[in-house]
Length: 136
Image 1 (cartoon, rainbow, N blue to C red):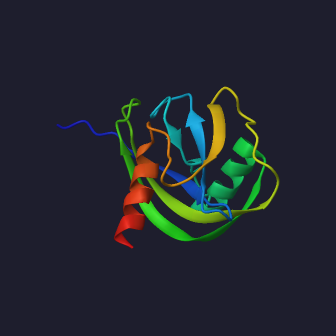
Image 2: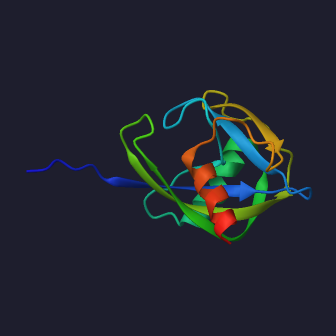
């Protein structure tokens, strides 16, 4: 009998500013520790993914966002934690607040990055989001 693990649900947001730069945070924990990724997190049972994205980003960065559409579906398969994550990635913009790291045990920093000057080590959801933009 084959042993299986459940697929887990997460979500994130590709937040762009008026200059077209993307907001990324550096992950300190697995999956993909050390990589720069989209803010977001794990969907709790009974919580809509859109609500999770707004909640997680408020908790991580202290900002309120508006989701403007579904950008892509990202998958992270065993990127250091032995798990398979499926995550909708939403397009978003900041409604209020200035980003700041509110969970320093989880995130090493944040920054706005031009799409032609991204950090070298990106999470798979960022790479999936970039690929979806090239296909559009």
